[in-house]
Length: 98
Image 1 (cartoon, helix red, strand yellow):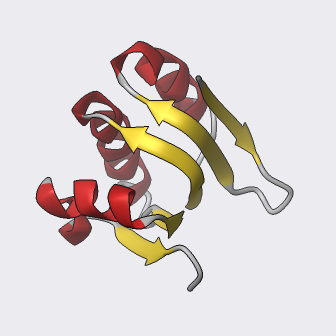
Image 2 (tube, one colour):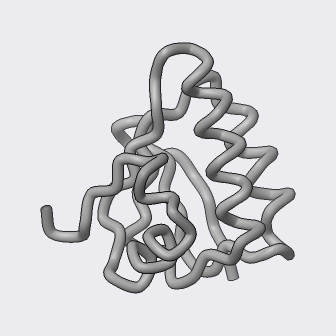
């Protein structure tokens, strides 16, 4: 199960599992937002390489406008996935509880 929505402060909230089966849904949502800046990952349990691709594509689009994505509330497991993929050097990642 995967859900993506806008929060009260305009942040993108992702919950569940962002895997290959959910990438089209996530990409359509992210592409529909002019310049997302904050993505709340508190409820994200898993992200696959395909899910990382969605975030990377969005990051490239947002960076073209001089901004960047800030990933907040990432649990240790999600942070580890980003670190092993080298994405911790591409995104600003804020751990849960920070």
